[in-house]
Length: 528
Image (cartoon, rainbow, N blue to C red; front, side, top):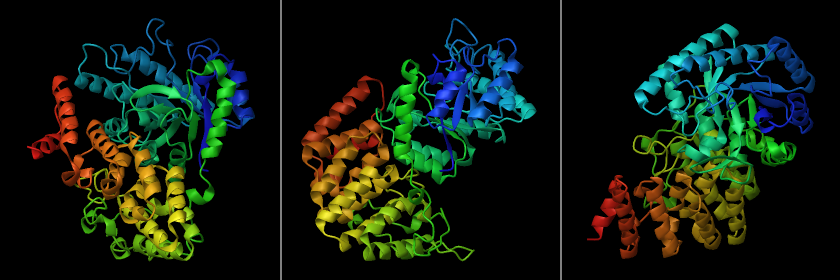
C-alpha cells in the first residue's frame, strides 16, 4: 500500500486534540486530517506559534502525518456556518484564514491545506461567483508560494465547485499552478459525480493531494459509515493504489463525534478488510509468466467493435486488434498480454482471479467509441472487451457450475470496472450459466451507477430478463440519463406497456418544465 490511512479530527469534536490524536494513533491510523477549529488548534487563539509547535511535536511522537482542513463551522462568523467563503462579499476574510492555515501547515510539516469554494450567495449569478472564486484562489496561492505548502481544492455538493470537472476547469483557467491540487471526498463522488469514486481518482491522478473516505447514497450529502451507502470501498482503495497515490486517505465522519472511538474502530476494520492485496494492486511479470507490458497504452477506438452491438455475442475484439499498439521499448503490447492471459486461463482456470483485476492496467481503459461515447456508457471500454475474452476462455475450460461460481465471485468482489466486464461478457458466456447471470443483471439494475446499469442491459438481458424487470431497467436508463442506445434489442422487445410507462415519464418531465429525452420520444413514436 502506497498511501496512509488517517482519520479526521472533526469526527472527534468532543475530545481534546491531544486525546483525539492518541486514540487515532492507537487504532492503527498513520495520519490525521486536522481541522483548524475552536477546540482543535484555533488559528485565532492566543499563543498560536507555541501551540503549533506542541501539536507538531505530538504528531511526530505518535508517528502521524497530517493535512490541514479548513471546513470548521462558525469559525469566521458566529452567526452563519462556513461564512464567509471565497464566493462571498467578504471573501478577503476567507483568504486571510487560508493564508493563516498555510502558515500553520508549514510549521506542522503538513502535506497540503484543503479548502472548498462555498455556496453561491443569493443574488449573485454564476459568472460573478466564478470570477470571485478565481480571484480568491489566486490570492490564496500567493500564500501557498510564500509558505511552500500546496492548496487542495475539494469539490463539495451544493457549492459553486461541486464536481471534479469543475475543480479541474478552474485549475486550468488559472494556468495549472503547481501548488494547486485536488482534495477528493469519495462519498461526494457517490452523491453527485457521474462516475464512481475509482474513476474520479484515476481522473484526478497526480493532482490528487488529499483524500477523504466515507460512504454516501446517490443524491444525498450525508457522511455515512462504510457499508451504509453505495461506495465501492475495495474498488476505491484499489484505484488509489493503482495510481500510486502516496498521500493521506482520511476517514471523514464529522457528525459522529458522539461515538468517535467506536466509529473510528469500525472504520479501521472496514478499511483493513477492503485494502487491496499486493497481487491485486500490482500484478508483475512473474505473475503473468514473464510477460512484460507497456502499461496503460491507449487503443484506437476506430478499430474495435462494441460488445453492446447485435454481433456482440462473439466478443469481436481479438488479440490482433489489441496488439495493434506497438511499444518503442520492445515491451509486449496489450494484445500480446491478453493472448498470454487467455492461454493462462485455458491452462489454469484459477488464474483468472489474479488476471481479471489487472486488465485495465494492461490493456488500458479507453472507450471503444470515444468520439460518440466518451465515457464508454453505451459501447463499453477496451478493458470490458478484454475481460469478456478472458471469461470466454474460462467458459470453454470449466463446467456450468464452476463458471456460475466464478462469475458471481468476480462480480461480487470486483470493483466497478470488473463488474462491468462481467456484465458485458454475459452476451458471450451467460447462456452457459443463465441463472447466475440473471441474478447479476438484476443486482446491477438495483444500482445507480450509469455504466453498470447500461452494461446490464446488453444482449443477455434482452434474451433472458423477465419482462417486468426489463421494462423497469429501460425506465431507469431514462431517469439516470443513460442513452437508450445502450439497451440491446430495444426495438424488438419494446411493447405497449413499456411505451405507456415511458409516456408517463414524459408527461412528468413536461409538467416539471423539463425536456423529454429525444430517444424517449423516438420510442413513443415507434409505437404509433
